[in-house]
Amino acid sequence: MALAAGPEAQRGKLVVTNIGLLLTGALEAPLGDADTIVVESGKIVALGKRADLDTENAATTIDAHGCAVSPGLIDSHVHPVFGDWTPRQNQFGWIDSCLHGGVTGMVSAGEVHLPGRPRDIVGLKALAITAQRTSAAFRPGGVKLLGGAPVIEKGMVESDFYELAAAGVTLLGEVGLGTVKAGYEAKEMVAWARKYGIQSTIHTGGPSVPGSGYIDADTVLEADADIIGHINGGHTALPLRQIRCLCEGCHRGIEIVHNGNELAGLSALRYARELNQMHRVILGTDSPAGSGVQPLGILRMIAFLSSFGDVPAEEMFACATGNTARMRKLEGGLIEVGRAADLVFMDRAQHSSGENLLDSLRKGDLPGIGMVMIDGIVRCGRSRNTPPAERIPEIL
Image 1 (cartoon, rainbow, N blue to C red):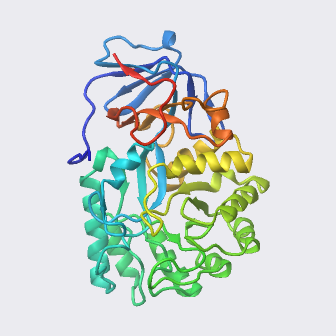
Image 2: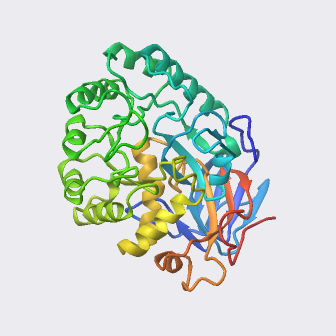
Image 3: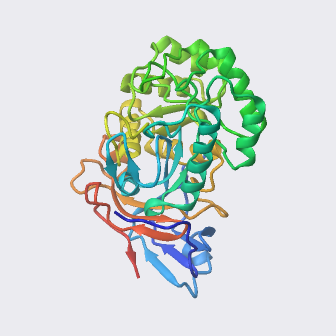
């Protein structure tokens, strides 16, 4: 298990060259015309054709050998606790394993699996602040986890949200996992959170853990949380007519997760496309969960939704990267100047029937990952979890 004590600084100039395909993460232009990226201090400072860029005096040069380069994948819905252990499955190293699935960022939907999770207001605030601090200071494998997402409970008042925000908490855990389940109660607290810059996610569908409840479309619309959490259920989904109602009835984020109803997820994607609302679609795993941890969950979602949903694979990559980064206000997610150099190097898996990387994904095959970089630092080479890629990058 790879561990990192905290954020580290990239040293010296880094040049990535000989990129065969650039996946930008931007839904409006998902394919880029560049074969070289220049990185300094963990940020992208230039990209384009090598002949047009200053690539001299690089401390490190990476030859991509024609691989595709994508922004690091972002899992919009995880349930961490502390460090790289999950009591849900009593498993160590799950975050580091997701790194080998191309995930460089994660967003907590609540630290709900902590044994004895406090439900009193003082305790839940203390847990959220502690989780926010620990996730910022300790990055398993280098993965950036945005943690500290309190589950709201009855009795909370506006000053509680002010105090959480002042302490650095920027998220609410899934609304509906605590005692606040009615739309009118949630609406008031969601508005308080939004007032102080805290983003909210609401549970959607049937109950998933003890204490959670059934949250239907009317409740979701009344609460008006920023993200419609696992619109395809976690695990039990709403009827498809209600999912369509959610896609049509508001402008909030549409989160589709791996650990949900696949038909409902596919339907939500199709509704979003019909409404020309693909910019609202983000992807998560909703793990760790009863079905386990899925290190390749985001890649599997990209392949599944692209192949069954008839969506270009590059657009699904944008949903898993740039859409999430913009919605969640993260520093990665897009390959553009000024963004964090969180990059995934991948290629068509060996013996895939697809003609190239994108075609293989449209045929349902997962790619092979050859390297993952976070803030300009190489965090893993050939993935231990994906099938072997035809080509892998090389540090010269």
